Image (cartoon, rainbow, N blue to C red; front, side, top):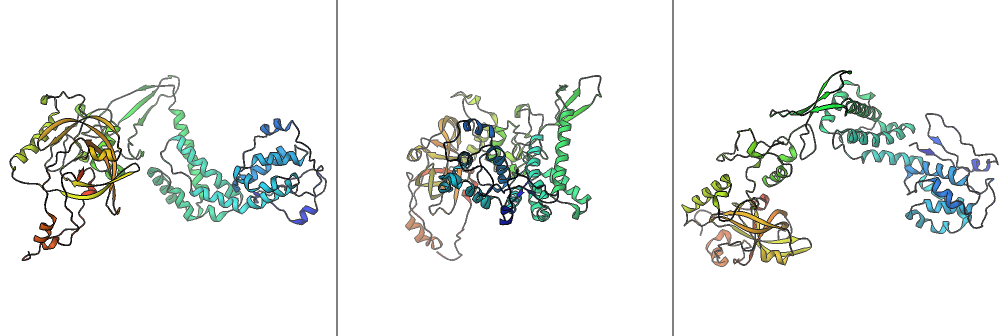
Length: 534
């Protein structure tokens, strides 16, 4: 869209004669000039008619189809040109013209010009005020330059996405070229901002192109033309692999999988095209699989398991198209001491599954791998019945929706999920999906109905906040709490005397924080007893 330059100097206005409107033709290297001599009231137009608007005006306005002007300097040249051609030159009365102009302004501008829009004699003054505010060519060009930096990044390398990215860049660049804004076209900062919006593979291709050409010859126009070539190539490939082919799917278990497309028409050149299956699951980038995805690698075990389940991936190899029991891979977890049939990236994920398919009272119906894990855990604790495990209890703020309650949390680094006491959930008005869960503790496995939901926990001073997802709400957590006197503890151990400890009973603990919130278990301070001190 071309930007327009306007000249409202007094000499031009005085020299206006009663000749038909004439638009000067601008040179190709200058901004387009639009005649605005029809703004002043001393131009030779028919006299002002203050009568009621003509009835045929209602039929004319819908045919004009002029976009509402919202104050964007980029839209002013198109708006004022269309208004002059379809409204000003078509209607003989300033009353009709002002009525149409009022309807073509956005509610914000209409409210701002309320005083001028009341009187038909102010029609031409309204036009001049609008031109002064929004008709500055420099402001319009600057707005186009800002548009380039706000273009949405390229999300994928599909034809529709490439075409969207190209069109959003080509328009502002064309305006900058028409107005000879070489400083913006050759700006290294603007150039870097736009090129960073490409996908990783396209950034590598563009870097190769930069290396093969002289740096001083490159500009935003070269970049946009390169994008246009990519769009044309993508469209050509889409046309080449058309719907007139026969699709023969093949199944392979190698590292690279694909679908072979064979052209069915014997009269044309026969070709075989291999279209790789998309590997992206998390960040929607085709250049890497989920195992090497940086976003997936940053997730904890719980988040990784959630992505794998939602994408219906194999738990053993993280591949697609099959489940764990049908996986041909014989690999096991490589974490030391673990021989589970799952991928190492899923090690430590919660082993909690719905119990709809498990019959109550039938331990043989339970999954063998889960049963073995429970037996090993129970056996370790059975040999050390006299050993007590002490877990930290901390005061916290629990938030669900707009409700916040103060409670105490038990930090259990041996738990794989977090649980909440039902009484606390009722205080927070929490709701969620109720289903059966298999919960395994040191006392064995049991199937209980519970609600799965989520909440937010934070320190009492709100210095740290964590999201607990998932959170299992149970009727009773069955904690064995042994109260320790805070005064006796701090009096016997000098290095604990100045710690802000508090006495806690079993009724005070309302939530158990497991390792699905790993940062909540981080130690900020460690107190050690000095040798020889009491």
